[in-house]
Image 1 (cartoon, rainbow, N blue to C red):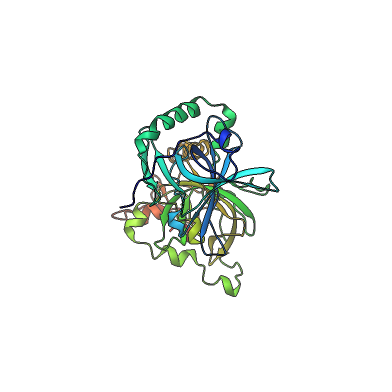
Image 2 (tube, helix red, strand yellow; image 1 turned 90 degrees about the vertical axis):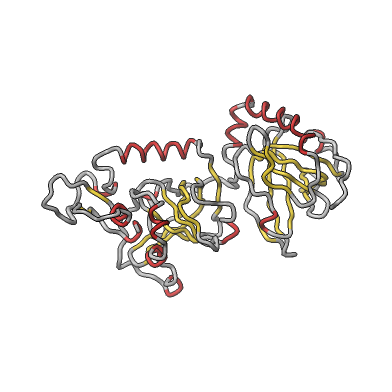
Length: 361
């Protein structure tokens, strides 16, 4: 077992920025986490911005280096705290700005969540007595609870690295072929290799043309064929109302997401494959986690709850003001249902199937 060193003394960010080329130890609340990148040396790096009571805005930048993607900070909640030890203060931009480097050989970090400050991730070389820092974390929590609305607004957009494009859409019901958009959605399922996820926002994507042209390189992307590989147990966990789409991203973008998470996906591109919508990434695609009580999440769930409480809630948005009558039934009181309602129903009775679309599967 490695021998413990003397626990480093914590200093505030405001004081640390004057200690250029020295090693310091800090505690801060994570304001922003940018997407990890792989260096030319095959190491990984991610950039964090943290705040404390002496440096609330715009936050202090810490670059964290590691051998593997998994060893980088895996931020779980939007108000988690991080303790850095022996990070080196340095200047950049011709000495005009200051940041810190968390070196994988010398520095260490630990992440804490909840009111009891439970440590859920730390580097292998973190050997500090956590109890020594809980008083400082409690003081910082009090500061954050009483800080200005401006700081709260900055903190609520963690993981975001650049403003939304002017040409964006918030709901799946508004997507268009060839148009980039930003999507607020819930992760329903993650492939084992982390290369794709299935997302949902409670709305219905517009009809997609089965005759849409596809290039040769796009033939491998078929949301229908992937959907059919999902087990019934997985399908039973999906909502029965609202379009469910497959999003294909590189694994390092999805390494932190899990079913049930709410995220914003930036700069996605929509295409049609075999009559189904397919969401693809662009060079600008990024992932931002959202808290369950985020105003955007609460807005989506309010709209969804209002929809399913209506007798016509299972009818796609694009069918209003009146259904096109794709199918008929002799039972006047039979309810409208989606294909997912039938797929997940134990026994299929006589019901009026309103519409069948591959992206619903």
